[in-house]
Image (cartoon, rainbow, N blue to C red; front, side):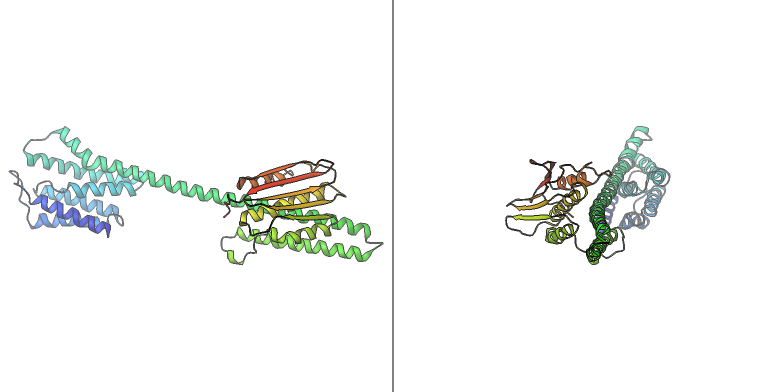
Length: 372
């Protein structure tokens, strides 16, 4: 529609210019053939985006034919428009070989005809200036537009690539949290089963059941995350992300592994943004997993504090007061928790606890949700 209106407007202007004023001596009065050439040159612009090179060549041929048949120079506007369009669409090498040569040839013919019509004779400076205005500047502007589009396209592709990389990093952190927690619980339960298998087979069987349940839960979460990596998976079929609503189940799993855990909820529980809810859950999971691994024989307390505009999470124990390397040897662990909290402009503190033990404390504002 837009190109059709543009072509009709240029046709009307060009036809009006062709019939306006006196024709210079030695030039031919516009007639039916001139009308056809003007019509072909202008109306072909309707297809300038779809078939840009054929339209360019048709316009250039029409300009040259218009001049050869002795008509006054009146096809500059179609040449200008099609030169710009071709330069803004075609790549650099095609502009040099397929766009610029015919456009320059048509522009030179048009400028020479214009000078002949004016009766001033051939003037190189005027030809160069005319070519610059009718062909050079349109091609230069077209190239600027082409380069800008290319940069925008590259920026979009880079942003998409960065988004994929960020999502994969998030999935890697999720997998670390799942595997580390499940394996820690399973190792503790296996050790308990080994120590009581002879004197209390029933308790050993119970520990083995907990190992099985923990392994199944970990496998289910891993399948959910691995499903995210499959482009043809239906996202609607994936399991929901865990949150503080599953805190009791998490605590029961840890208690089953032999760690006494006390839970404290301060404030009024309420729905949280999905990203904050998942992060708070993972912090509690990471804290309890670290207690299992590094503070044998300890008691732990998990506190969730609901404030008006923030959520606070704390995991404290009365064990040995050290958790080892905070990066957990793989760039995750507490470092991963710190990165999670930083996404929401929150803070995470870790350190020795007064009176012995270790504490992990996080604070997340509820007005900085950037999840999804």
